[in-house]
Length: 65
Image (cartoon, rainbow, N blue to C red; front, side, top):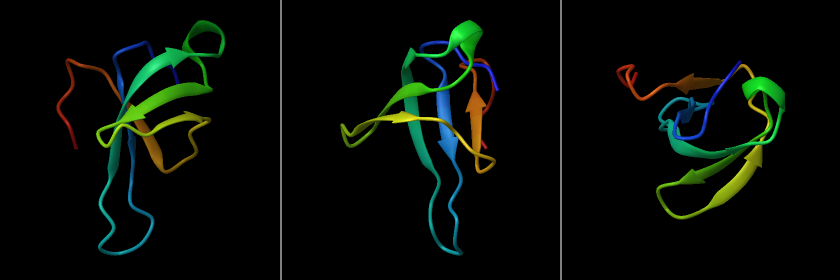
């Protein structure tokens, strides 16, 4: 998984009915675009994340899922 600042991190819902969480990657802390990432969500919450298999990086030119 590789990302740059400005990409979106999509964390898919883990249970039926749970919505995906989408946040903007504001800082890449790993080397060459690798995790961990600092992510800001729409509600203003920020977190440092090492995304798992339930996450996808979307680049600005790609459509949202």
